[in-house]
Amino acid sequence: QVQFAESGGGLVQAGGSLNLSCVISGDTFNIYRMGWYRQRPGQLRDSVAQISSAGIPNYADSVRGRFTISRDIAKNTIYLQMNNLQPEDTAVYYCTADLRTTIGTYWGQGTQVTVSS
Image 1 (cartoon, rainbow, N blue to C red):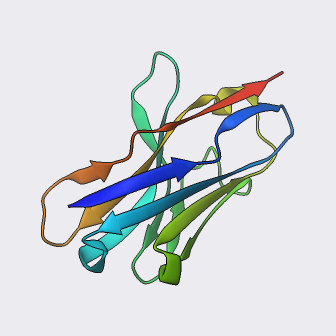
Image 2 (image 1 turned 90 degrees about the vertical axis):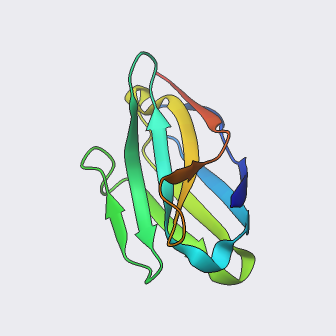
């Protein structure tokens, strides 16, 4: 199992930036993919960005070019740098991890991002 400590959410005006952080602990050796999902009001959760154990990123079309996912292996931390935020980016953002030894995705508790127009 893994545990998450997310931070960096908050309120920002349209066009602004935020940087989310997620420290992952536990069975980090078996993680093969980490990432961020979000749940916008009234909608299902969807993927924002993922990064593989090889460091290969993948982005949703809606955020490509504005958001950047990165990781610090030594600190077991992943980041989501979000630039040019728009009101439609308002959501709860969740840190996630997938393990080689377990079926299913592990989820953090989420951090709220609110973008005002």
